[in-house]
Length: 360
Image 1: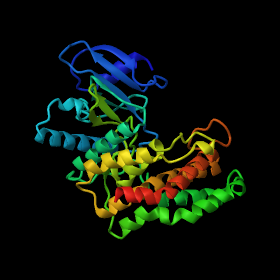
Image 2 (image 1 turned 120 degrees about the vertical axis):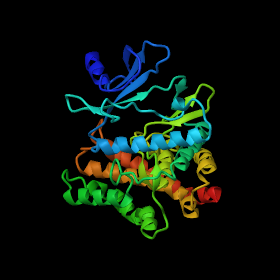
Image 3 (image 1 turned 90 degrees about the vertical axis):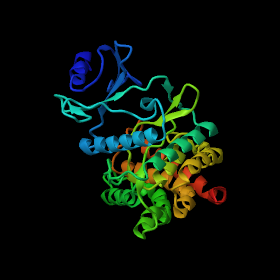
Image 4 (image 1 turned 180 degrees about the horizontal axis):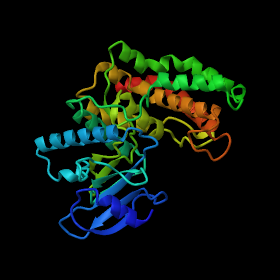
């Protein structure tokens, strides 16, 4: 992408200062996120980011959610007397027509936020970083329990187990690549556990489980740390939407507590790390325990089981559909991913009594 295009996009925003430098931020492979450095010492730097319109179809809804959430958190921090707010909550810059996003002449959507200086992310998953993550995401949810308006789902049915199982059923019925026969043992295993893995929807229908505003993408690198190692704020807010708290708890466990990655085809490497579970649970309950119900707390270990199970369902459905959603490096890639996640699910279920005892 030409920097002249970036400058044209920036003119739509009410930013302070004069652009001195434009550079790719992140891996630089796609060049859809840029750091904008300004000349003036008293003006902030910025981050210009392209919104993934292929995933987030309703950009207006997406940005409305983010605006409501960041405004509410900022008000909470102000009420506490917190200083340096622009380092503790994201601030998005309005366009000249009062929005927080703009569409360019190629129908790409962009937004501009204030860059948070002297901050860093961490990628290593340790008990220490997991505890910090639990505290940060639990506190994030706690600050949003009294948001005064209902927000929409930026990705409808994102963590709906029943919906994912229906997608798999449709893939089995269509069998467009003739792969159902070879995966029948996996399908039988999924069928065996399907009903109990829909516990969240069943509890919600019974009026026992509320939907809350959740982050829904609780990776350890989705929070910013200060130079002294304290957590500044939670970032990457595109998936913030109404969900069950199991989304934030289980999604972190699925990636952080696996001894290996979901890409590893060697199932002997796959297993559930109880030390990561304990650290995250302690941090999470420390900050979220003030508002969680007994039902939510008791089912947190089951969230750790539900998410690898759900991801196995999604990988297997994509394999049956001809690998149309997840990028693959070889023909059996999605199949191996599904096996990996089912192995993780098995280990979580074996450790369920220990997890339940720890939480209680």
